[in-house]
Length: 364
Image 1 (cartoon, rainbow, N blue to C red):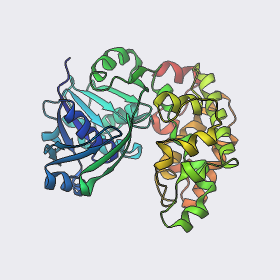
Image 2: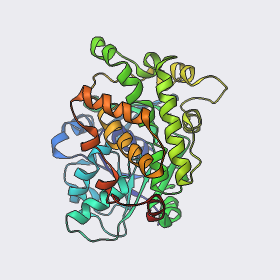
Image 3: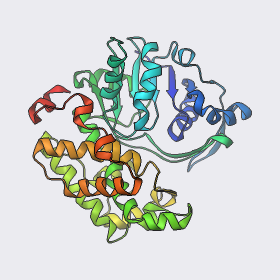
Image 4: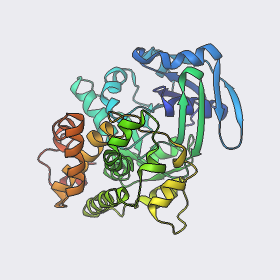
């Protein structure tokens, strides 16, 4: 399949950035946002395009193909790319699943949280029985910030390496050949357990952010996690969670990348022998990222509920102790007044409640 027309679902950081970048590279792009967040499209409509800035240029990309009509958005697209928060997968599936044709590819471009399986499970719950062609990455293909009201994006990084898997994994090669026409940074993962365990956000965000909760409250939005919140002490929590994640991966038969390897591979910093704290503090990309601005941000809520909770459950089945992961979930639940062990994504909610480790490995 030759890819020409791509529909982007979600007009946030990733969606608006992809709309500008892919339009500039010659793809026929349609950008969809749900009516509740239609304001994210108003700036583009007003300006008739998107201002794109990266380290090499600043350019106005003429672009007006925006809509809140899902049927109109996905019609004739070869690839339907979801750039939405992981907690929104089921909500998007509810409005999208019925409109997808079986030849179209659903490409979930963002933090890996078993999105492919969750999309299919939602479609099944709705009584929709189709053979979907669906795949996902472990992270977004850009380091970027979008400003919807100004129709402006600032790209700090075109990611160099992203893990990619289809569901089922037997379809990975075929779907990667299709999606690689859009992004040449894709490398094959073993399966969607692999992409989920290579998602770096749950490892980096919640632990250090929780340890800086007072500073976040006091700063009134003027806080930089990577530059000031990852210190010689808070980085120890990050490292402890890293070791638990790596152990879970080993039990699944994966050789996962550690925190430095992962981010150096993607291009966020160089693996030059410096310690992890210094690399985060001085990264040309990370050090400029402001936030989180509040303790109810996605650094807490999303990365605990759709990341750490599942990792904890995988550790239980794999026989890997996860005291640091569990502690972050517990403290986050206390601070946010929400029992994430109860509300988060776990194996039972994925349909694997009674599965053994070997059954989990063979299922995807």
